[in-house]
Image 1 (cartoon, one colour):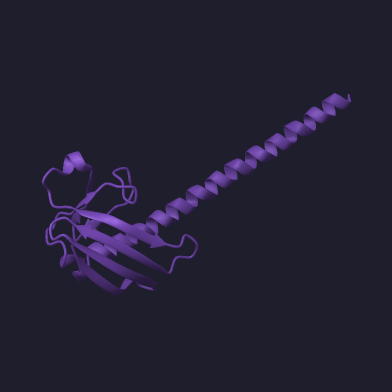
Image 2 (cartoon, rainbow, N blue to C red):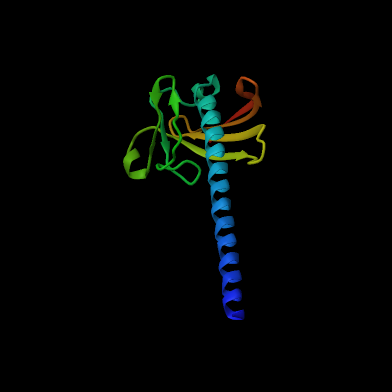
Length: 147
């Protein structure tokens, strides 16, 4: 009898633990979705800026795939009406590309971000700081460095 009660309590506790794990995973998934939505907005603001135009002049943008922006990324990036392509080394070949070199943002309540993009075409690196305003992400300052 005592064994049955202990088994019931163990099953109940295991059910609670499983439920907490599922809820935690769901919360992390929602955090990642929100993070990616902000990242998409930031990168679209950057690639459609005059600052970006000064390091990369082609309409079609090729991003080099890396740990910050991979081929499997769900982001929908567009320069004007042209969809951005994310390619790995083999696919890039001799194409001019840009590389997302740094992306720094707080996960909780992001209100500013630092972005660094390198252009293989001009061999220049664009450093930007953006702040979140009511209308979206706004470039506050920038610096262009040459190799």
